[in-house]
Length: 372
Ligand code: SAH
Image 1 (cartoon, rainbow, N blue to C red):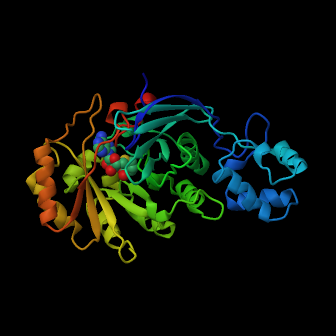
Image 2: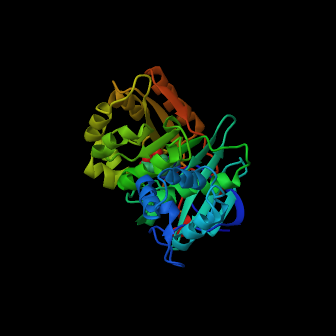
Image 3: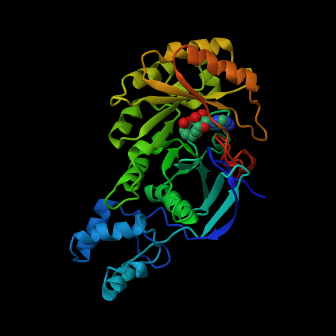
């Protein structure tokens, strides 16, 4: 059985027939506009071109993002003739090929085929009081972090905004009616800040209450390997920011995350974090993948609080999720606990992330093996 790897989700699914939209606004079958590829202003322009009243733009977007229809025929507040007119120039192409793999812990990994036959992975993680979807932002990844399976694929391409949003629409369609996705983490395949224009556009569509999916930005977390100069561009989005630190010295980080750390070494990254304008009561999250014998020593645990001094933050420890061919190992529970204790004693909120969906390669760093 094939398994894709993405970040933190995973499970066993059958094939779910859906149709994927094209990265370009035109669909190839009828040379018509892809409504999902239009942002707010694009939709307003289309409505103006049709010489319809401006409020129609919001009406159509609601059908796309709130009722998640895939057929213009279903837009019942448009007259039959207006529907026919819209159908003559536009379509809602959704993915035709979606597979799901269900893990024993309830996590579900979705493999979504794009219009160019590449695949992306999204992972749905049910918890008692929330339903989190981990979404991908690139096919493969720009970066080459040595502990991450996606990094081994290289970058195939950036996702378009609508391909990011569609992951949410497709997975929500597979959830029960009364189980809305409550939280999003941009921790799937790819480096979100290397595709920030499309990611930002997607976040607008995902958060808009009037016509978008309507998820609160406070329930969205964007995770970056550390493109220091771009951190400030996340501020206007209002979402939470997580930084994958993963090492306490440049020497270590150059081995674990070579591409990013050579571009933006630790001091530059931490300076950008210190300068990140946080609203009262909000904090950054630092992620730290624990690799046995590599970055899990007592010295590391003591250095980490010094590096983070003065930054309002919490720390998420992620015990390494193993995959075939990786040289790294997960530390023992004792080492993980000890690392956490040292950080807690230094005054930090520290959580050890549960590895969800590991049996379907849906956990952090396990996405992408099908496409390697
Ligand atoms: N590129 C972004 C988001 C994708 S990775 C980033 O680097 O933040 C999401 C998280 O999974 C990161 O914190 C990353 O360090 C972690 N991760 C990657 N591979 C892992 C693995 N094999 N085991 C555990 N965590 C991993």
